[in-house]
Length: 101
Image (cartoon, rainbow, N blue to C red; front, top):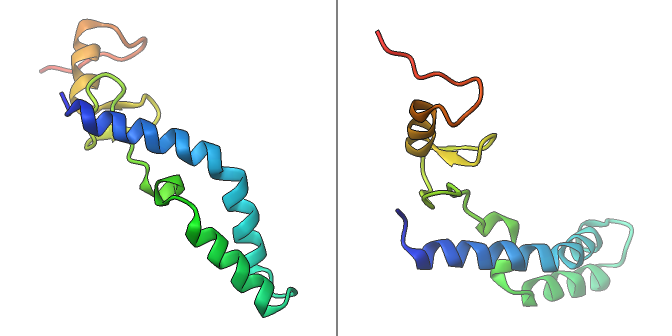
């Protein structure tokens, strides 16, 4: 089980990224637009830099929804490999059977 603080930190980052997503996209589009003057683009870049760092989507870490484990993560199921194996062995995941020979 991951530390509760790490899981909460990641949830906070997800909420913040969602909150600032539209504003960040707008500022990034302005900063990248070659048709605008250099001053306008620079102002947009400064405004983008003033936004909270945790509002960036790149700071979000994929974590298992059951254990909070950050590594061995399956995106499709949002589970870590260990939690996936446990649930598969118990028959909790439809259509998945743990192989044994």
